[in-house]
Image (cartoon, rainbow, N blue to C red; front, side, top):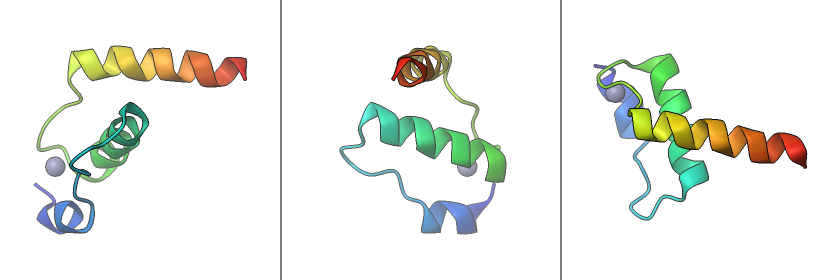
Length: 54
Ligand SMILES: [Zn+2]
């Protein structure tokens, strides 16, 4: 576990979906203490579909 990364990057208490997505993507790059939950992966797919349409 990359404890130093976690100290520098706490999850905001009232994180929006976008914040959680960005947190998990950054987290996956720097640490692998827990995988991205399947539910969030679906949210990530939906999020990027929406942002591509813009
Ligand atoms: Zn971690």
